[in-house]
Image 1 (cartoon, each protein chain N blue to C red):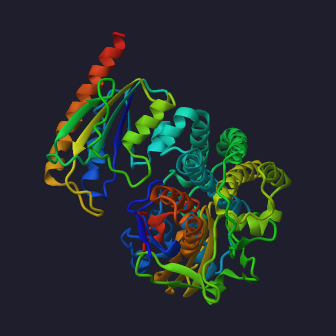
Image 2: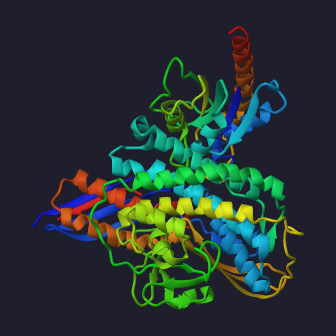
Amino acid sequence: MLVLCIGNPDRGDDGAGPAVAKALEGRLPPEATLAVRSGDMLAMIEDWEGFYALVCLDAASGGGEPGRIHRIDLAEEDLPGDMAFLSSHAFGLGEGIALARTLDLAPPVIIVYAVEGRCFDGGTSLSEPVAAAVAPAAERIIAEVARLQEAEHHA
Amino acid sequence: MTTKTIKVDYLARVEGEGALDLHIEGGQVTTANLRIFEPPRFYEAFLQGRSHGELPDIVARICGICPVAYQMSSVQAVENAFGVRVDGQLRALRRLLYCGEWIESHALHVVMLHAPDFLGYPDAIRMAEKHGDAVRKGLALKKAGNAILRLLGGREIHPVNVRPGGFYKVPSKAELAPLAEELKQARDLAEDLVHWVATFDFPDLERDYEFVAMRHPDEYPITEGRLVSNRNIDIDIAEYENEFEERHVAHSTALHSLLKRRGAYLVGPLARYALNYDRLPASMQSLAAEAGLGPVCNNPFRSIVVRALETAYACEEALRLIAAYEMPDAPCVPLEPREGEGFGCTEAPRGICWHRYEFEADGTIRTARIVPPTSQNQPSIEEDLAAVAAPIADAPDDVIRHLCEQAIRNYDPCISCSAHFLKLSVHRS
């Protein structure tokens, strides 16, 4: 299983991913691989190869309440079209997942955690509501990993 | 008189933020402006007062796609200023690292960003539904390029292993060997890519460019050479400012580079190829012929074929360098800072990347000047746009818009670099 935290710590709330990764250090079972990536989705598709499940966390801008955590199971629903996963590169999270699925390179299980951000300006740090969402997001990912492990054992 | 304005407010599949405004009056294109609104990044200013040792790591941050180009031009300038030459296997490792950047950057652009234009898809994801094999090959090529960057640079984006004088750490021959297996496969994939893109339908456009590229006595130019053009420029890189100048234009946060005496010029794959065809190995000349390329290509839309050819060349060159590699005794040569001026120029995937620095006696940077490839190509892009739009000025806006966007992507423009750059607006009157 791959736990992928996406973001750029130098672009305000886009740093949610790296901050959650830090909170997850040493707290995931050995079967789970933790990776932090800055946003090159094409490089990330390479990271997914061989994993049966992908849990990823990224900041999103949907115009909703900053700090709110969304859970999206791609087996049940698509990524919401009104939620932009920010990337300075040509391929964001949604495009990366869509491309990987078209090419049969996507893990069968993909769970996306999206933290709504407020400010993505260069050189700024996490906004207060997003900083407050880091620990709860980490706890939810730890529980998600445990649930997926359990499901894999019973499969 | 009919006035028409066509706008593309935000150009897709380019790196960074820019737009295009096209003004058409009475069926004639009067203005084609590439508007770059990426905020200025002030790199040259904040390099002042920093140590020469910090330079490659800071300039790598200018671009996530071509960081090696900035690193290589900057360390070359430091070494030039301090009177040191990096040769032998250290030089070979730098060329190998640069091959990795050419492979990952070219593969990304050819397959993921530019090919959809020729095949009529809005993006690579839709294209992958019908052309999955080609997209998989593009991803595999990008992966092979990234593997070189990871091994020699420490990581694939913004590498951290380059320093003035050489590297912080160099690989053993055994550590380099596994790359060769991946690159043999990558070379075959790149040849397939050349044959695939050669089958595309290319708009009929021949432009009379002044090509500018580096030229080396023995090599297809990547890491060093003189600056040459097809109109008799043949100068040392230190003489760049005698022939070229940068100008502010109101519609762009990026400076426009021009030939002082002749205006727009072209850098990048078409220029490198036209000025250095004789430096390509016979295998690559044969591959070019199979793809329908002669020794010179003046059709900007065919740049995708040249870019694919250069990808194959970079794979072959990387394999040659790995086969000849012997681990050097030291990862770098010693440097003694001294007051002075240094120049660096290398062939980034998009064209020449020229640097000049003045250093204090302790190696502190006094002044910096960096001229990235996309700012050099902006006037040529605008001339291409006028040439592309003129014959179809009466066509529907969507037709003009599509062809103009495709023409811009011929350049694989890196707006982020040049704003230190896309929306299309067509104004008809």
